[in-house]
Length: 224
Image (cartoon, rainbow, N blue to C red; front, side, top):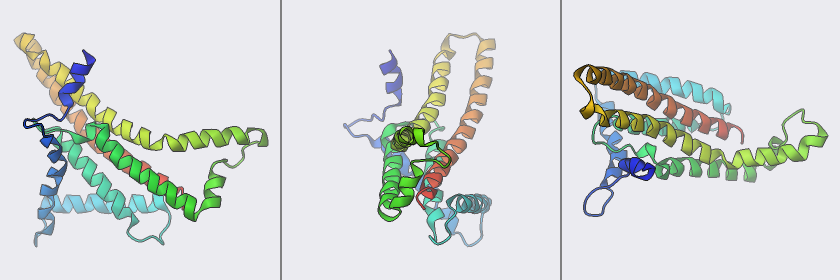
């Protein structure tokens, strides 16, 4: 039963082609208005969001020698938030609700951070395995804990985003399937509940995008 329930979110189309994954690139359609001569309201709001994120990520990274480093995390936030919001529209596949995409984003980021840190800042990476103030008797134990916490970071990033996106969609699907068996009064309550859930999902779409980008920024700041 659970397999059939979650299979409703699988990208399946005719001709044995998963064309639903093309929804990942629908966010590109929002880019052309950014190049208008006269800025639109959407353009103005988005520039304010980008500048705010740039200031926050710049503080988190804490290394001003690497110019343009915040652009990578702003682009990551943009891609995820577009996909999260597009998934709230009917008949549009939510690619960020699958581990295939989220792990493809988290794993290369984490691997590149680790390789850069261990190659260029080896002593700093070794020192990071033992937090400051750790008693000598617990140093070996702390090294194991810190190593495990570093290894599971890409998994936690990927699972957090996918689980939060699919949880709300699953709840809305389950509530929507009961609509045909309800009375008019209960159906009205169900519609109000669905609208509130949709507002909540919109907030979750923004928050999860921000959390993914901020955690990636924090992981990159630890290697500098």
